[in-house]
Image (tube, rainbow, N blue to C red; front, side):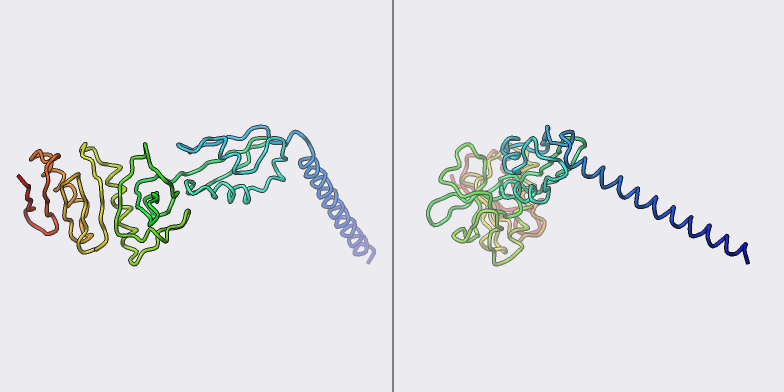
Length: 253
């Protein structure tokens, strides 16, 4: 009986010691957290920015509203990401803490590929996903391709162009990839996707009839090879690659 009583007392003491140890550990953690939030050691003194090709580092930092001297733990990274993404040219943002005092901001930028004209004669600048990057009065020094077949009167910055068929947005991605990979030396001036069964593109005064959206890359390559092989760069006429078989082309004399 005494043995059982002693064992019970020992168990109670052990539980009490464990409880006290846990409370002490929690107290130490609380003190440590408080110190981390108060010590200058954890104040931000360096903000690194990567992934930016066109937007200056200082502009990205300014957008974030993060300042040197802010405590690295108090800084609201979610709000900073939202602030940075308010720039239409920013596609995504990742911000990480690098203790004790550095923040790393990595951005992925959107690239401008196309433009259209709104009813007021302004240029609507668009990326490969149909997102409106800006609306401006001129596009000097911007190497952009004109697109037709969209209602630019309803274009809003940071929003995707309104379309009557989502395939038009998908086609922008296809043509953007072709533009990025193009090494022909030819200048593509207009893409007209007003009619998805009669897609057209223009190299100067040469109209390329692509037909529907199937096998676009192969059709474009055929047309480019015809222009280069027959030295039609400065000619006027059309090339029809809209159907299977040998392409047909007509050149005005």
